[in-house]
Length: 289
Ligand SMILES: NC(=O)c1ccc[n+]([C@@H]2O[C@H](COP(=O)([O-])OP(=O)(O)OC[C@H]3O[C@@H](n4cnc5c(N)ncnc54)[C@H](OP(=O)(O)O)[C@@H]3O)[C@@H](O)[C@H]2O)c1
Image (cartoon, rainbow, N blue to C red; front, side, top):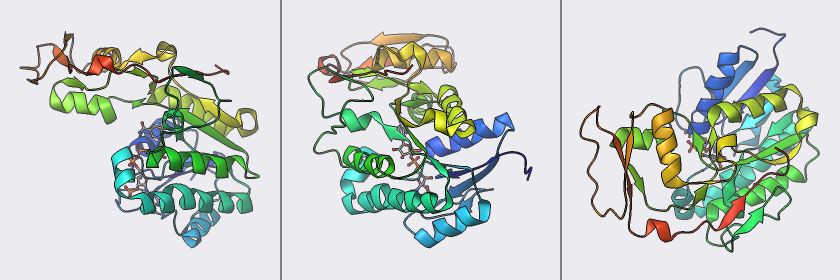
């Protein structure tokens, strides 16, 4: 370990966003990274259950990070809805455990939040960082993220809470779905505000390198999506940008889905008959970019 480099603890490195962030930061060669898993061991990662305060105390005490980035949590709407108690235990109590230990050890904290804290706005409202969070009442995930945000905000920590929508990378999430299925299936075509993992990682580095300058909530999205982009247009952009296909073909009002025929054919983007009826329910904007 190079002692001159700051140590960064990344909780939840075995997950989608955590692993992407780990790789991005690793490629900069500027940090000593310590990554954790909970139930799914991965090479090079150490175990840490955020529901266990003793485990957090040990992990932070032994590694002495200057910053903690926590990507540990339940992050799928359906998973949270099906497991409300576990969602509370991990997404709320687990975050509180991290905050209390970080306060004791005086470590700055990055808590990644989500556009889902604002989905309760449904009349086209403009939501900036100053807008009061309002998740849909039935969104167990969104409600748990608001509770966790409040715990971080009312702590004595130097913290940042980036709120993001879709996080984009070639081999993850929505891009991976398109790649694996040979098509983009658009069921809801409302406005999205995605961020490329490279842009996300740049913000994380700003925070790690100078936490006091980047405290508070920030809405993050890549510049090209700053006015919001319909999901079908996002699909078109990322299929081309990540070279999943040279070209795309939009098939509106589709009821049947036939995947891409071969590597040389354009990637079909199917829009289901009801998708266009789903208007954006709020506008996600930033006062700081
Ligand atoms: N995906 C997005 O586009 C997006 C957008 C905005 C915000 N976020 C936020 O980013 C975070 C990560 O999202 P994701 O999509 O990467 O989720 P994910 O792929 O499901 O990963 C979740 C991570 O949390 C870990 N974890 C679960 N329970 C834990 C526990 N009790 N103790 C410690 N670690 C635990 C998992 O570890 P094991 O797998 O080893 O159990 C895994 O590493 C979430 O807080 C989410 O709200 C994500």
